[in-house]
Image 1: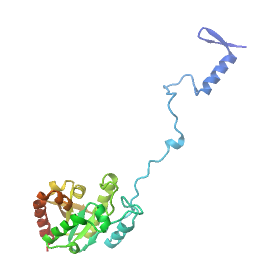
Image 2: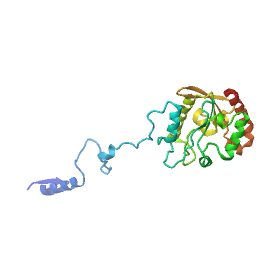
Image 3: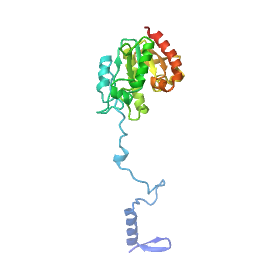
Image 4: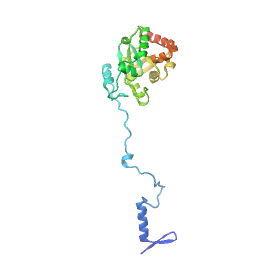
Length: 246
């Protein structure tokens, strides 16, 4: 029976074979390698290493290129941000041929209960604002950045990007003479600044059908809490009235 040396000790080949087998059973498959190896590193399975990334939010392959079809898309599509089987949708209202498009952010809880955008006390103030420039809800076109309310009451992240893409397409289909943007959320989404920063100046919204003039001002809900800003809002409304015509 042969022997091998282990340090200063001599062991039999049977013992050596037994020792090597124990190493193999412990996961050691070589004694010397070109590069260091982390024997304690967790080994990933093929399925784990090849697992696809989480699916992105579904988007429509192509948006309808007619306003009537786009309205139907807003009423029925499951691809919209915040869409859920029981979620109420408050779709655009008014006259799309009025040349005056007004945009708010999303329905409030009060809007969802009333079935219309800008309802309640804010809605009463909004109606007075329109009357001051010789308009009413039937002689403007009112829409939301989203026709669904988000669970948090805010729009951000990928949902915001999708809403902006949809509303730019929407504005392009309507092709108004000018848009009135109500509040910070809409102003920041479409022209990149807050309503306060944008007030008193014309801005441009790029759409697939061309550029559209936009005036941003304070949302009626803001004016209820900050009546001092009504003077600035009135100046914005006058510029909007002059651009869209009576």
